[in-house]
Image (cartoon, rainbow, N blue to C red):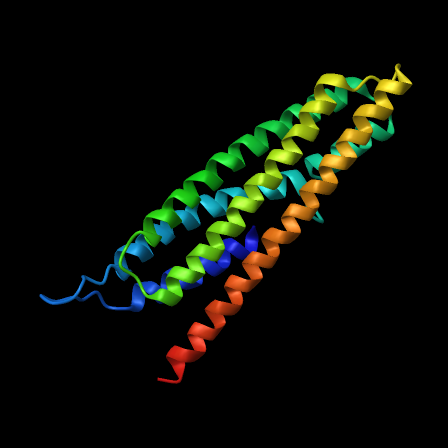
Length: 199
């Protein structure tokens, strides 16, 4: 998700440098206006990055994911419920920001812009949609744990833990596909940069 935000920032700068034009015989170039939409999408993606760090943690602060693993290891039912509830809220907020970013990208794509930028934005939109799909999988896993985890019932505990692991695996696989889309878009961005530098 971080790479999506950074690359969109670069492309919005690049788009913003292109002058708007158009004439009586041709369509108006809306590249500058599209760049403004991408800047708005970057605001949403920055917020997602902050929420992602709250969940994943960093070297200085443990994230919600680490808290959840610790609660599962200690069979602490109340802590599992508390942390999964907090994870669900983070996912919900991140999903809302992701939808807003997709909306801004779609608005930019509907404008009269260069075909290379159009393809770049298509790939970024596809990457974000995959990430939202991954968030939904992770949310289902968190809901299952919150509502069904019971360390006193071994069969139930094993079942919901297996569901969590399966949906978490699906989450990681979808996120990998999203990263592939993002990398493809970044490669296109580099090619466009080289093309413009050689002119």
